[in-house]
Image (cartoon, rainbow, N blue to C red; front, top):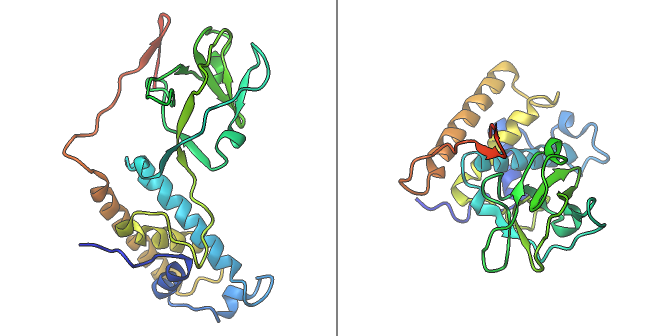
Length: 238
């Protein structure tokens, strides 16, 4: 069944949230602490948190390719042994690098992978084509030689919701945004309904998560667990 055309923007998500929680824009408890009675900042905050939680849930269930993109050619700052790539400049919407310690997120434009990701704690133990993450930077290990034109595959963070902008989310899974938003709202005093409402919202979230999980498998290939990678003569759990 296709769900195209439903829950397409923030306004429609807000209406769905109101239906689920049996409230509206004029709820005095809802708007009491807004900057003005018309901003509905509490609702918009819940919806944004719901969007972020729903995206992370689908990523954890193997649907990260939906938000897969790449940077332009990376540029480094500094000199060996303190060369780094400023990730906020390379990808302002970076949520997660699309790679791990066995399959590098860095590659040439033609697809040739470069380098191996290590933990920051191991930065003094490796030399050569390794890299590690620290704060908002990707540091190159001593002696690393990053080829010109190297790009980074990454999962991008979704933009702030707006009433006039399409929701960048799988059509059939958009109710999951509303379900997460409603559960976030349970911590707010304005949520009407008491314990019975909270139980209903928890049940709804569980059902939406189960449905999304069943849809997350895009092929008959079973999920696999990769073995740990060996660095030098030591094994590291992944």
